[in-house]
Length: 185
Image: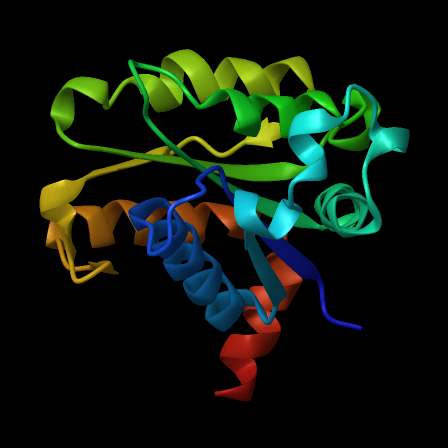
């Protein structure tokens, strides 16, 4: 059974640059390591997220997304930036996960925003959030602004370079998977 990568884009917008970024990274990681992938956004979680104070109150749709997140071998997490931070519904989704469920899990952290002034959001908001869970956030964080996309597709060479670097960093966790794929080529 292949290792599982789950992406979560903390956005309701469709189309979404955040979803496009998470999906792009998930696709490259799947190519490099043979992961099976599933990428969600907050629409996929559904309406019960906003009305549930506890995980047991979620409907089956939202509970299934959280189950996929906690059972993944690796996560790619992306958030749009609102006023220097992540949106409340995204944080609420993460709040419904028990800290031990993400312990030692490798996590690629990403964010999108309108311009460069929000670039430190990945370091000042997302890295500490997943640090609380004792997850392994990879050293390279990925921030993308509007100019890094063309028609909701990654189009910037510097962004592609950062994405390549973080995908390479997964080799510390999955060296055999990468070697096996390279040997098969």
